[in-house]
Length: 304
Image (cartoon, rainbow, N blue to C red):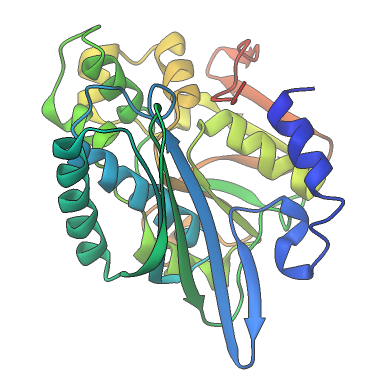
């Protein structure tokens, strides 16, 4: 078993409070009096989640956006944040990060209310977001046989943006922006929450996240690869064939919303693309206009 998955499996033996949702969801949901709090934590590690030469300001933005995307998947409104920061002796980088963090928090209306600092050689940055939800908070585990599978926005731009940032290719500025400053789908999540059977954000790759939704729900996901939405910029620089679509569907960092719903597309409260169907069985299965598509060796991002 993957070491990360093994560790999380061990944590489940002590994370028994209902708010933890079995550690199978994007966030914890804690009822306090008449308030439903939604809490999430993400950590970015240099060289793992961002490149050493990524601008500090955009690293801060991405940290906030990744956390806010988890809240979007629960239909929650972000309220406050706690930050954890590693000081590595680069005061100029720290100052640029703080400037970017302030800009991102202001943009999303989030108050910084505390945190912790530590000194070490390698930089790791964590953020806990606290949000509030009204009514139903969808989980990953509610998809039913017969539901359609949808995704908001486009898939794959951030993967190309990462390649641009690495100097592996040239490309449109919008692709680099998709990697460095993603936009969490907060308004879409709030609108969709009452209408979906299951919902999660796409952070590690469309295929691996579809597998997680299917596994949590005890069903299978059938995905039409031809239906996966790609931007014009992606098609211009990477193409539109099967290989390009598989690359888009496994790249990650999209921060769109993947959801299952029994509603037909025209009745959804926000724009989305139908990419497949929830069926009886297990796993994720692909097809396109030419028939069944073998699953790639890697479905998305896995921490080793």
